[in-house]
Image (spheres, rainbow over the protein chains, first blue to last red):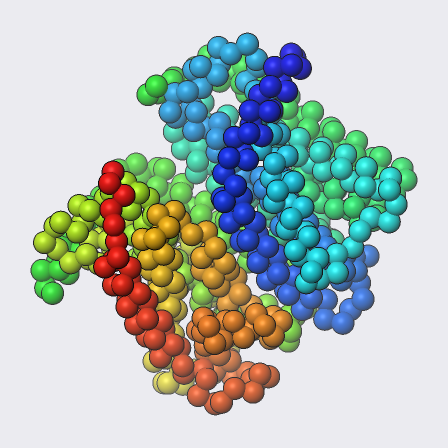
Length: 265
Length: 269
C-alpha cells in the first residue's frame, strides 16, 4: 500500500470532516444529553449496590459516558457512505484510482473518526465530567493500551461496516440490510449496556461475535478489568476479528466487483 | 374544511402508493426499524434478568411505560412526517414551501400531506408487542375510567410529541438548517419517558415537568393505570393532566408556527 497516498486521503478526510463544525457541535449536544439520561438509568439499576459482576457504579457510568463519546469515533450507529457511491455511480471513479477500494475507505474513515474523537469525544467527556465522576485508568501504561484497544476497535468496526456496505454490489436494498446489521454494533458491543450487566448466558453469546471487540474490550482495558496475560489475549482477539472481517471484505469484493452494475453516474 | 380533509387524504394516498412501489424493500425497512427499536427493550429486559427491578418497577411495569410511548411516538412520527425537523428544513431550503404557499389549499394540510412515512409501523408494531407483554404479565385492574382514559393518554402523547416536531420545524424558518438540539427533547424525551421519572436528577425532572410537561404524559398516567403510589407527592389529579398539557403544548406551538410563517422569507431557490 502506498503510504503517501494513504496519508493524503487521510488529510483530505480530516479537512472535510472539520468543515462541518456546527454539525459536530450539534451532534455533541445530543450525545451528551443522552449520556446524562443513560447515566441516570445506570444509577437506578445499581440501587445502592456497590458493584455488579465486578463493575462498580462509577465504572459503569464511565463506561456509558465513554460509549456516548465513542459513537462518532466508532460509528456505532453504522455508516452508509460506500453504498451511496454504488447507488450514485461515483464508485466507478473510485475503482480506477491508484489505490485499493479498501484502503481508500480506510483512510477516509480514519480521518473522519479522528476528528470526531478529538472534537466530539473528548469534549463530551469533559462536559460529562462536570456532572458525574468519571473513572480514569490508574497507570500511564493503561492509557496507551486503551488507545491501542480503541484503535483496534475502530478497525473491527470499519471492517464490519465495509462488509455490510458491500451488499450494495448485489442488492438495491443495502440500506435496509445495514439498518438491520448495525443493530448488533449497539446491542452486542456493550454500547447499550455494559456486557457485564447482561446475564452470563447472553454475555457468552456476545463474546462469540466480533462486536465486543469493537467497544467492550477497549472499556475493559480502560477500567483495568483485564490485566496481564488476559489483556494481551483480549487485544489479540480484536486483531484476529479485524483480520477475519477484512478477509471477508476482500473475498466479497472479488466476487462482487465483476458483477457490479454501475447505476446513474 | 371538508375539502381540506379530502385533499389531505388524497395526498396521503399518493404517498402510500409511491412507498409501496417496492414491496420487498418496504417490508425489509419495516422489519429492520422494528427490530432496531425492539433491541433497546431487549437490552433493558436482559439487564433486569440479572438485577430484578429498577426504582421499584418490574420489567412488566417498565414494558408498560416503554410500550405506550413507543406506539405513540411511532404513530406521531408517521402522521407528523412532514414536520420532522429534518424533512421540513430541507423543504424550506429547496424552496418547496414557496409552492405550498402559492396553492389555494390549507398550508398545514399540505405539509401534513407532504410526507407520511409508512415504514414507522415497524416501530409501532414492536411497541404494541411490548405493550401486549406488559398487559399479559401485569393483571391490570381495569375500570371503565381506565379503559376510556387509555386512548386519551395515547392521543395526548401523539399530540404533545407532534407539537415538539412542529416547534422544531418552525425554528428552521429562521435557521434554514435543521436544529439538531431539538433531538434532545424529541428523541431524548421518548428515552426519558420510557423510564420512571424518579430515576432522573431533580433539575432534569423539573425541566420535563414545568418546561416541557412530559412527566404528565406517561409516568403519571402509568401510576394511575398500574395503581402505583406517587413518590413525588403531586396532587391526586396529576395523572389526568395529560390531555390538558398536550392541548396547551399544541396551542402554543400553533401560535409559534403562525408567527414563524408570517416572518418567513424564501431562500430564493
